[in-house]
Image (cartoon, rainbow, N blue to C red; front, side, top):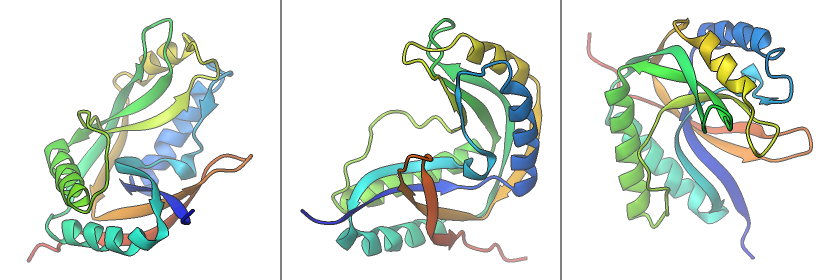
Length: 193
């Protein structure tokens, strides 16, 4: 069997936004103590999840990421508010909402998906809904407390981020949780001043 790597392509919020969001997450933990909370240093905005990829395909994936990045200019996103996936009594995921130039982010996502699919990669075919996952329910049936956390996120802003690059991450699972390693940082094209 060929060696594989679990990969995803993401953009990273600014350290300032992550810090502000991390402070809020610390306050929310006591409201949903049974949830599995994402550590601040692991917060990222997934653009395309690739899953298990044969190592022989990593270089072509990197080339695709670089090509798409250079076709797009930097854009600004804001982290504001939040919500849950799942019903009120069965909330499974707590997330922070992404606002700002979401159309630019969606354009990058569409271009990446098209380029990767022409390479033979099979991707999920559902509408792209950009968000930052903050916590997952510890119980597979959901956690009502995550809805209370989402209510506390309402109206809160965690800063603006200028997105200047795509990042290809490797995800390695362990008993301590996932470890993310950046394999490539592909800058967007620079606008002429």
